[in-house]
Length: 312
Image (cartoon, rainbow, N blue to C red; front, side, top):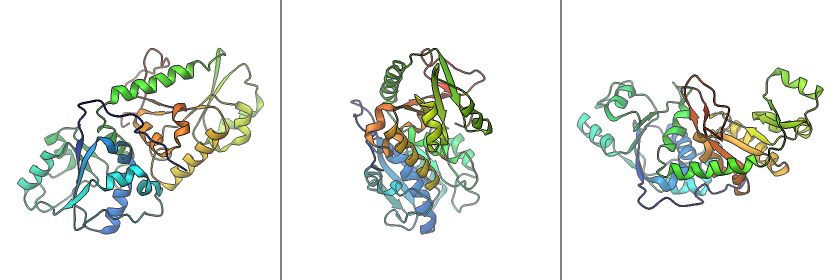
């Protein structure tokens, strides 16, 4: 699947690049390769915002052995190679003061493993680190201990963006273009639950259909529904680096090549889709911001955002 170019227009004059620090130190090559394959996947779409990546461990370069469960594009894409060139490994600081200085110098800190007990570690927990340096600066994405790690990795990468308003405006423009397709007053929304089997019993020609997720693999149903939009919002199974998510995106790309529908994804995941999907589908891909709260927003014209979960 040939990737497109998320960086299709430049940053504004005066935009700043960020220094990323990976914490804590690595010790094993396989461990480092696993974590960095994920880091490259999520941060490659934002390479133009990234000045440097500092990691700690006994390595001279990033181990690029791709785990069998990771989409190889994580390390083979053009943007990923650019990020690799910005990575430098250093010896772990020897004292609490030296750790503090290194962490203070970084613009963003990605905690890939929550420290339990490290010699010289000035923090007893990642939570204490966030209290010390700020929640915006520190993101905790511990794959072994947190089921929200993929969301946190996506948000950590998104936080590098220095021209977000401009990017959002472009996504909103594409929503305005999508609205021109709406000609009928009725809408039908289809999820992937057991009641989907009942969809065959009815006629939907009086309205527009919107589908979700793995329905992209159900060609007969897509023929019947002829959807104008598809929604995909899972940070693990849709936007993540796993081979399972890769298979979903391959089906999605094949479906978009055959059918004329728009793809709606969370703003959190938008750059990932644009970076790893062919450029010919970028104009039909719309990223919508998420918000947390108790109310639903059903009018994207008035508020360009939808309700997400608290950890999104």
